[in-house]
Length: 274
Image 1 (spheres, rainbow, N blue to C red):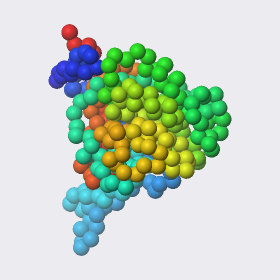
Image 2 (cartoon, rainbow, N blue to C red; image 1 turned 30 degrees about the vertical axis):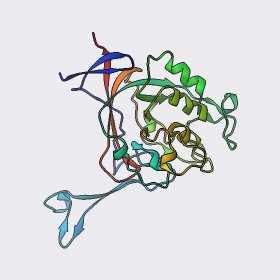
Image 3 (spheres, rainbow, N blue to C red; image 1 turned 90 degrees about the horizontal axis):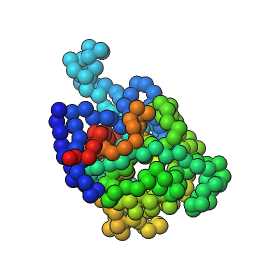
């Protein structure tokens, strides 16, 4: 057992780091995989040239593949404010690493037509949205600020591992007011099982992203963001066997010079430390 004690949110929490709960979707280059925004499938191809072939099955001495993928669309990924700015900011420059106290909550979306929140001008009344009241109800009374928050949307089933998200609103999305709840709670690292915080077709407004990062509508410079050190992880898979509650969150990303990168969020069940 490898134990750690973390002081956060007005208390001390301990966790066993030897048995993490993964939240990343395994990206199968040859099998089923999720897809958003009509992006090409993630693809792997053996490196070949000059008599070399990077596939032992084809007579090569080693396996050596070229991987092609779109981080924002092909699986679990973490993004930073550089996603919506002219400044080229790499997510690994924002996410330095470490463990964060996080809360996992399950939220059931409600129809946009029934919600008191701001409605996207193009939204149909029946489109499912994550509203401020549903998010507040899931959070309940939370002591102190939440460094991390993991949001599982209901219903939750394994079809999320291979779903093709097509159309103007193929999945639930956050209202601006719900994003403001995240800001008020102090969330700095958000993990969701959705392809995007915003509606797929929203005329480029990305209202929830902007509220979360503290960017005014239409702003495109990173220095205008009041929360430019925050991250969003999308297309996570939060298995039904993982219970709502408190965890330590470890967000692992490669050092790619990109606003988003494939990521591996890990949860460690946390309990009050006496």
